[in-house]
Length: 146
Image 1 (cartoon, rainbow, N blue to C red):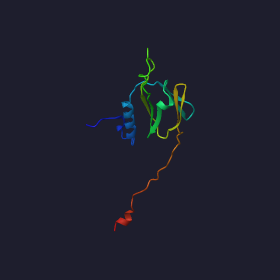
Image 2: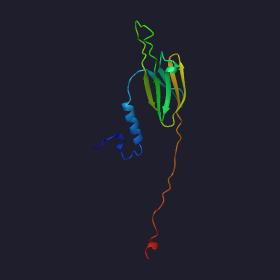
Image 3: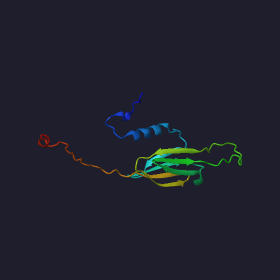
Image 4: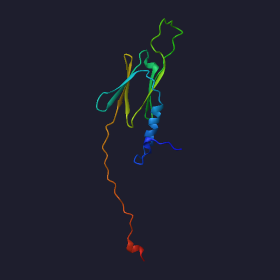
């Protein structure tokens, strides 16, 4: 039995990759840690800001593979060397992924006052218009009747 999807319409040709991306997003964890913001900083620029209090630059990594941006945080467990009376600051590892549109570029990543900023540049779309020439496959009837 084949499954019906949004992209089964005969008018949507070549969008199977979009369906795979949506499946990947649906399977991704909806964990809210760490909290983050996404803001538009100018006409073509975006900024992802993650609250990473307690993480140093050595504890964080930002990688881009194909169109997937992955931000990882892993702290060294220091519970053996410290005695906590109360531990309310999360010291857990995380992976936060974002699926980027085709052509988006990661411009910069900075750590400032416990906030990790990842700046993205979205290219402005160019308008494409093209006329396709129609060829005739008709043949001369007088040549074929012999």
